Length: 234
Image (cartoon, rainbow, N blue to C red):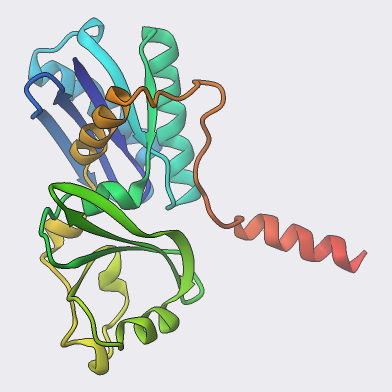
């Protein structure tokens, strides 16, 4: 089965085709263009299918990154994935953005810590580790103050690899011996990883309802927080 992957949780807009039978990447295309997902996503996908020589009817499922991440980006990606699943009558599965990031580094003996910007000195983060060829969750996705995160990593322990948008946060000297930042191509989100993880979920019968699947924002948007503050002042 061919799985179409969609990744729009950050400034990266990425689409991919994953061959579930061969457990191999068939095609992938990514752009790092900032806030242009609404304009780029569907043309990127159409061109990917064309270049790969794959007809829409050959796509058997769609996997989409559901967050955490950019509120607008997540909505764009999820809307596209839902439309595809409904129109093409194929299964849909939502994939954790942070877990997909960790999937890119199959390195045992290290803690994988994807970070995505949550604004105001905060980050979305989770911790993962490979055990017996499987990616295990050590810390579920949460919002944390970056300063608090550095304090956690100042304690002795296994080496830590930062992924995602971690380059936005300078690593303090006290944690540099334990914490490392791999090259950017390894850190960036990829639709291929979303599709691969989505294939695993579908094999475990973890398909999502087209109308019920929603983004994993974790925190409320700034607009919602401002609205609540105004309501308290009334």
